[in-house]
Amino acid sequence: MHDLTRCVQHPTVSHDGFSSLAVPTFRASTIVYSDPQAFAHRAERGLDGYTYGLHGTPTTRTLEAQLTALHGGERTVLVPSGQAAVAVTMIAVLKPGDKVLIPDHVYPPVRDLCANYLASRGISYAVYDPLIGAGIADLIDASTKLIWLESPGSGTMEVQDVAAIAAVAKARGVLTGCDNTWASPLLFKPLAHGVDFAIEALTKYVGGHSDLLLGSITVKDLALHSALKQVLGVLGIGVSPDEAALALRGIETMGVRIAHSGRVARDFAERLQSVPAVARVLHPALPSCPGHEIFARDYTGASAVFSIVIRPEFTARIPVALGHLRLFAIGASWGGTHSLIAPMDVAASRTVRPWNPVEGLVRLSIGLEEPNELWEDLTRFLAALGSG
Ligand SMILES: *Cc1c(COP(=O)(O)O)cnc(C)c1O
Image (cartoon, rainbow, N blue to C red; front, side):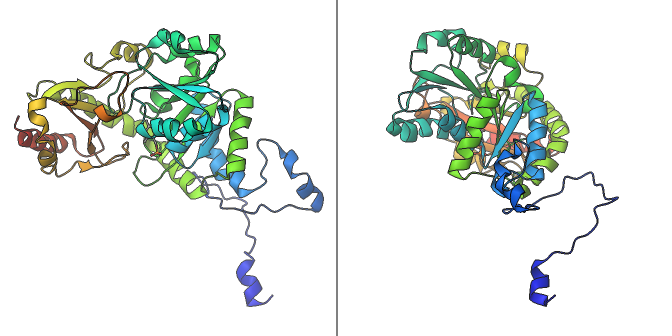
């Protein structure tokens, strides 16, 4: 064999006796077939068969199967980001003439998707109060095809009555999808509460180290799975096995990371309630959080993201005070090992439950730093706000 040929022919090595605790990273665009018949019949390989790298590798299938098991679903599809998980679900379900209902606290790019992409393609949307519960029935009309939920909501943390909304939707033949990124399947399982699509930004707690982007959609109904797969196929959306491998590594420690940082976050949230500059602490485990009683009923615990509302007389100093932090990094996309803090402009993205624009909202994501050092850092921020 010529050296040039040898360069593209990887030697076959034995896999016998090799067994690793880690999931191997299988990279592939082409998948090769043993003979022309196998190639000709590749479309008949079924949901678990391999046909082309875009449609799955053993690495991506392993992550899918793990998420399916955690959610108590039947099938999961992976997509390149959490936002893609929302977009692919909506595109798979909605046709011109249909309407989608979204909660007022929804992750802002989802509102953009509805207002600036779907609307111009004949798909309308309406925004509802996230605390509406069974009252959602009044907003359903003949064109309503999908109700979107996000619980708790991005930034403002309202906890939704997922079961009540899903029950009303089911009775009216409307599909439901729930963004479960805050809770992860460890703390809440939307499918068990009647939701059709459970979506996760794996970018957050599953990845857990702020170094990957990935999303997932888990369903019980195989017809919905095939509608999702069809969209992924025609749009040419697949995920890298390298990202999936990082997520498979991250998910191994997700339980201890969330348990630890969730405990620290809860402790900080309680302490922050008595800080003079803080008007309210929005942490689902505290009675001051809208929907707290739903949280207490349905969730098995809290993750480590929560918000504080800063009193109007202190908001002007938020940017300066953020500059005093040494451990908390300023940035979005939470759920990693580093603690993060982000001021959020809520009023601009509210249309149903107005937000007092003179109040400031600061979202915290607690990481794995030593808790006392982290609290000390937070006190530097609070002192700089003018309230010790
Ligand atoms: C971050 C986030 C997303 C989007 O995830 P990406 O992977 O960053 O696209 C969607 N929903 C919620 C609630 C999020 O926090």
